[in-house]
Length: 358
Image 1 (tube, rainbow, N blue to C red):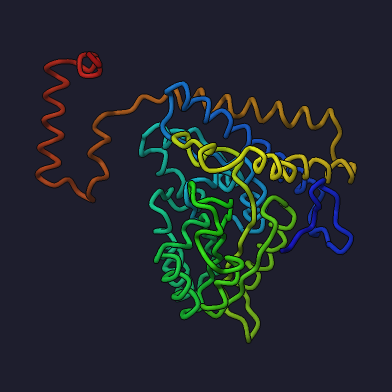
Image 2: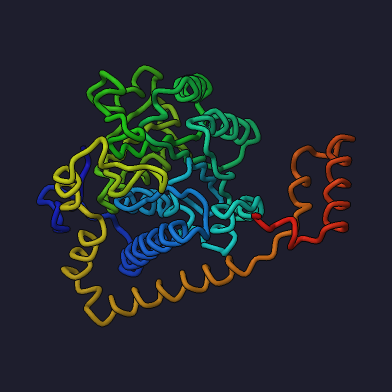
C-alpha cells in the first residue's frame, strides 16, 4: 500500500513528497476541512427535516480531494454519491445542497464543472465512464475520466463489464475504488475472497494499485501517475488503472443507517487515529506552512462559506411544474395531461391548501 505520511502526519523515511507548490498543499487542507464542515452541516440539516437522506464523507476526504487535485479541470469526474470532496475542489454552489433537498436543479449545474450527474444506483455509472473515455479516445481528445465508487460496487456486474471493456479498448479511464470497509453493513472481507480490490485489475490486463486513502499526498501521487499513463502510456502499458483507496467511513452509511448494529465503536476509534485532517495539519505545521492563526482563518472562512451555501439553498423557491420538465425529452400526452391537472388543482385550491398535511 502506497503511503507518504504516517498516521501522525509525518513523512515516512522512504517516501517522496509530491513536487507541488506550498500553497497547493494548504489548498488541499482547506478543501478537506471545508468538505468535513459541509458534511457536518448537511447531517444537521437532515436531522432538522430540512434536507433528505444524506451520505456522510467523514474520513474519506483525503482520497477524494487528493485524487481530484491530480486531474485537469477539463477532465471528467463520475462519482457515486459520497464523494462530496471531489465537488468541493471543482467549486461548490448552493445547487449542490438542492439535490439533497429533492430538487433536480441540484444535478444540472454539475456539467459546468465537468462532473457527471450524481449516481445513486450502485455501480451503474462505471460503464458510462468506460463509454465516455472510449468516445474521447475515438475523437482524439486529451481527456481523462475519473470514476469514483465504493467497495460494494465491485460486487456488481457493472464493475466487471466496465473494467473489461476499458482494458479491451484501452480507454483513458481511472477507476477509483473508495474502500471504506463496508458496503452499508457488509464488511469488505465478506464481499470478495481477493486479498485486495486493486489486484482485480490484473484480470483485465491493466494496472491496479492500493493506496492509503486517508493520506492526501499518497492519493495525489498515485492518481497523478495514473493520469499521466492514461494520457500518454508507454508502449507496453494500457491506459486504464484501478486505484483502491483504503479508508474508513467514520459515520453512518447514510442518515438512514445505524452503524452500531454492525460494527464496534472500538473499531471506529482505531481508524480515527488515521484521520486525514490532523495528518495533513501536522504535515503543514512541520513545513512551516501554517500556524494557529492561519488555521483559525481557514476554518472561519470555511464556516462562512458553508453558511452562505446553506442560506442560499434554503431560500430556493421551486416551481412545482419542474416535476414534468425532465421525464422525457419532449412532454408526452400523458405528461401534458398530468401537468394540466396540477395547474387546475393549484388554481382551484391554492398551494397552501395542497401543502396542508391535514
